[in-house]
Amino acid sequence: MTRLEIKETNSAPFVALDPTSGVFEIRGHSFLDNAHEFFTPIITWVKEYEKNPNSDTKVIFDLSYINTSSQRMVFDLLKALNNMHKSGKAVQVEWLFDENDDDLRDVGHDLLSFMELPYKVIVKVS
Image (cartoon, rainbow, N blue to C red):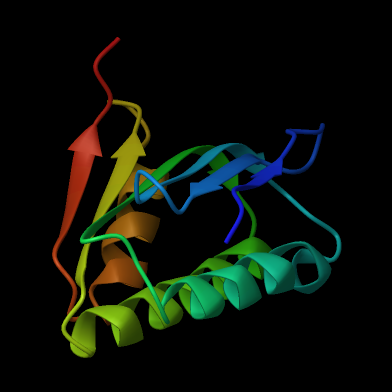
C-alpha cells in the first residue's frame, strides 16, 4: 500500500496518510464545495489500509476551519477509523485547535463523541 498525499489548496486541507508509520495527518482549512468528492478517496484508502494496518495508527486533525459539508465527510472518515478500532486495531485521534477557537474545539468534541476510539482534543502549542 502506498502513501496517500494531497496538497493543500485554497479550499482543501493537506492530507498525508502514511501506511508505513501509521501516521495520518489532515491539516489546514476545509471549506470544500464538494467535500464528498474530496474525502471519498481518503475514506476508501483508510478502508483498504484497515485490511493490513500498522500496529498503531495515529490520526491528527489540525484544521483552522471546517465547513458543514466537510464536517459530514470527516464524520464518515471517523466512522471508518472507529470500525478499525472496534475490530481490535490500535487507533488514536488527536484533534488540534487554536486556544481561542471554541467553535473548532466544539466540532472536534461533537464529532468524536460518537466514536468509541481513544481521542484527545488538544490546544495547539504556538
